[in-house]
View 1 (spheres, rainbow, N blue to C red):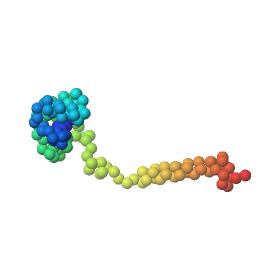
View 2 (cartoon, helix red, strand yellow):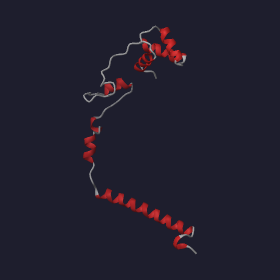
View 3 (cartoon, rainbow, N blue to C red):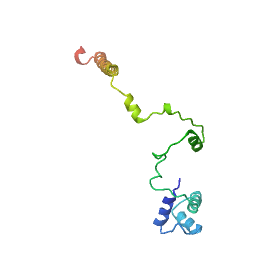
View 4 (cartoon, rainbow, N blue to C red):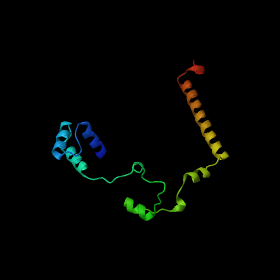
Length: 137
């Protein structure tokens, strides 16, 4: 996808002005190896006006001061959106809900011991099957 800023910079690098006529822009881009469809898209992009966006707003899809309602989101996205404030999870709420529990710690330790035991058992079984180590005959 072409970007208007990239296209203007590309023309400046090639000693051409973005305000040149369409034929001159077509010549410059053709010499650079652009296809006819790309040249046509570039000319259309150069000739269209783009709304000005402040520098910081261009990268922020949602500003911190924005408050969206269900109807506004539905209008923006084109689908029905229902926001239930009771089901929304914030980072603070998630962090408050986590706490250390002995049951969780014991289950993690149990998994570690089970994995270690299975690995040790597989090693001993392999040594027995291949008759190596203490199982040499």
